[in-house]
Amino acid sequence: MEQRKKRVLGNWKMNLTSHEVRQLAEGMKEMPLADGVEVGVFPGFPYISMVKELLPQIRVGAQNFYPQENGAFTGEVSVLQIKDLGATMVLIGHSERRAIFNEDHLFLKKKVDASLNAGIKPVFCCGEPFEIRNTGGELSFVKQQLEDSLFHLSKPNLMKSVIAYEPVWAIGTGLTATTEQAEEMHRSIRGWISEKYDEETANGISILYGGSCNASNAKELFACPNVDGGLIGGASLKADTFQAIVNSF
Ligand code: PEP
Image (spheres, rainbow, N blue to C red):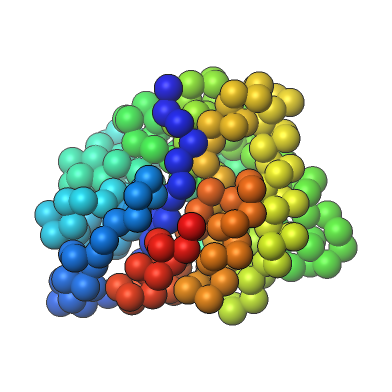
């Protein structure tokens, strides 16, 4: 059974063209990987296999897929296609997909199941918007997101998943959760897993923090006992910054 790992994953979002991907990968090629830390990136679809070839020492994932095997879904990409390109993980439930593309909890649940069926690790994102944090409802909001789309999984399948807590108000805004806010949420998530499954499962699953995590704040966030690393957006687009975050444990 997979052990709880420290992880730093970079979400490149809809950024970079092939030349820029090559440049960034060049900067990351010599990157000394921190001991025991799993590093990975999520490039745009067209560059998955290129990054896989350029950076064989790290994990490569996809930012999205459509949860049908194949067929008349013009413009969509299947889980088998991302797997074929070399992706071994996929982002599911990112707030941008929830908000801009209206992905609801049932659709996310389908994606979670389809990724696990294909042997692709789901990195399941959850997190509350500002209005919810402002009124103190963040714990129940995030618990509901997990219950709706993730907690139907069997214990072995949940253990294959990664959870990323990403408060929506912190994503791309420069506002980072305080260590107290992050630790409270991560501890609560582990507590819910323990109640629903058991302690072994709760202690085995990586829970990453995401939301304006950068080279200056990663150290204190990663020092929180229940924070197992980060899902990094903007700060993963520069090799030296990303390396500094990887070295922040
Ligand atoms: C993200 O989009 O997953 C993210 C954490 O973005 P940023 O680090 O730019 O806030």
